[in-house]
Amino acid sequence: MAEHHLPPESGGKGSVHAGDLKPARRRGYSYYYGDGAGSSEPLRTVCFVVLVILLLAGITALVLYLVYRPASPAFAVTSVAVYSLSSVAANSSSAGAGAGAPNAVAASFQCALVIRNPSGRASARYDRLTAYVAYRGEAITAPAEMPPLVQDPDSAVVVAPVIGGAPVPVSPDTAAALANEVSYGVVSLRVVLLGRVRFVSGPFHRGWRSMYARCDLLVGVRSKGPGVGADRVPEAPLLGNPSCDVDM
Image (tube, rainbow, N blue to C red):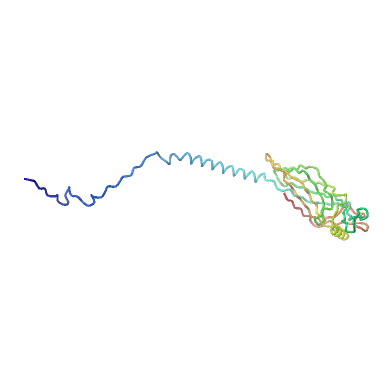
């Protein structure tokens, strides 16, 4: 005779619940390759050291630049001697030109020019220096060449070049305006100095730099006779304070 078994009672040890019938979750597997933080630590240290070195190098370069940075030279005109200043009309018969031929100015000056190097640690070297005198934007003297000059740090030197002599062609308006100012005894002139300068700061040698200096003067001229260039008194007083500018 077949045996019959009853299902176990609910709540027993062998009971089956609905939650037990859910599919089993798959477990993820991880692979171990070592400690990542420990392997990148030397790289971080190297990067930090390089950054510190670059920062220190930048600060050092900035300090050296501020300490040895040269300043632009300063110029001043202390006195002017006028040896000749005359307006010469062109000779139409000899030049073969008409009445509208350009005029010329025969002028000769000697200017006492003070050049100061304000840099306390840099010496200055000047080369290819030329000076001329201009009136109303036109040169009334030929350029006068000057010898090279070497200047110590924080020093001043006085140069007194003689500028001009030969007649220089100018426009008729410039010649007429110059004659008019000379008749009043006051002439506005500009002394121009061209050249190049090089600074030497200890172990640092900078390249040559072009220099353009100009000084605006108001000169009092006197004569003992009529005309523009009659018995000109050499010493001419400077009226006001001459202003000088330098472009490099």
